[in-house]
Length: 630
Image (tube, rainbow, N blue to C red; front, side, top):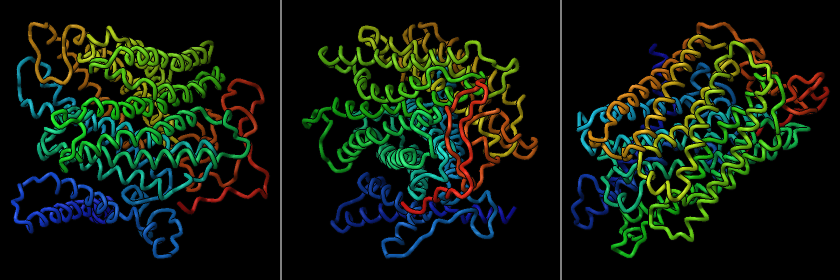
């Protein structure tokens, strides 16, 4: 016990947190000291010092954790060979608390962090949902409610980004036959830089919070409590993680695919990951500009958004939504890729329209850049702009519809098992929930109906259906499906099915309930509502459903933790998959493939006689080199 505690306390995670605290204190003290030299009084929370201290704190985290060590040694001309395996004299599990360059370890780090952040964000949601279960203010103040729902939004988005990072980092190199990501050190950086960013956002709650929602709209953000500064900077730092991870993924897929794996022989999940990475790489800079301008306006006295000084608050919305609508597809595209990846395995027939499904991911990514202003129909935008954005929003339904038709056609006359395993249940549940999100979206993309529903709980129900159907349910399906690959053991099937049958109906009640109270006049982002609306019973049902969903997630986490010790070893290929990662031992070896493979067929030719996807490369062929530099 003491040895375990000592290993954790000496880990990169703890060193980084200490480094962030020290760096933040030094940065804050530096600015406060300069102010004192000028003879000016410094308030207890001085925002310019807070902002500088936050940035120095992030640097302190990265330095203390050792994330930047190899790059700094390069500056002075020292060689730094990549380290593989657990640190000398320490157990294998210690890798997950330290800086490690293996893509599988980083994927698991992302996954565990995602689940932890998901629980935190979900707890905040349950707290303010209990407040909304009854009219009148029960146990939260308006300020506390505003901070909780604002933190819930951005924390859940961070959790989803972490889940995307988990799936992409763990699976893509295995699926394309690579030994690792192209830039292992950059891969580690993309994970670890998100940790101090998350701590900044949580820290913002401790110094007054913020009341702008996750969108951080100006000019409200210019008048919010001091916690707003840490929220904006934490959000900004997360962008480094997105940009680094997406660039790494695109280079990996472009340069490290196995012999014979052309673009239209890649697993369909890889197409979803590529499309999401294109969005991240090209749009994240836009929201970074908006966040930088907001911080500069608060702490430096510049003026961009405040109309009293000649600024334009609508400019923030354009910059923000040009990123934040496409980022919805960053969440959704990998999840839809999971659905398309798993359905052929369980239906035992080819994925219908593989090429169309692959290109539809790129189509969604492209059209996603042309629809951002449908979030701004109520901002006073001229009809000359609103109408084109309405039509472009409707256009998103085309590539999304391609995926739905493919899934239905793949299931049609397929050989789905009579007793569906948990991953298949979550895939089918994903389709039903995402359909709710899909059919309720065009109502908000059409100008006349959006003007009435824009500020209502209809939007809340639609968005949750899109996120749960497009990511949460597929993420659960992926966790159950690849759990044997990650751990080498099977999960407990009865607990997995209990998780599903609690979560699916609870979500239907929650989402449809949210939309129904929206139609009856319930506004979003408010702490109370008029009892004359007659929606209190529905709010109680929504709150109970949220509690059931939370309990079901805890059941899944318990299932995975207990199964590593109690369940039997998994079969080499329990799902009879053709995908390359299931043709090697579980858990996967350090460098994935001891013998390289060649792609000789199509990835989803299930049920076709003598169809092969990969074969081992003949003896004597050199194995692809392990990446060694960034």
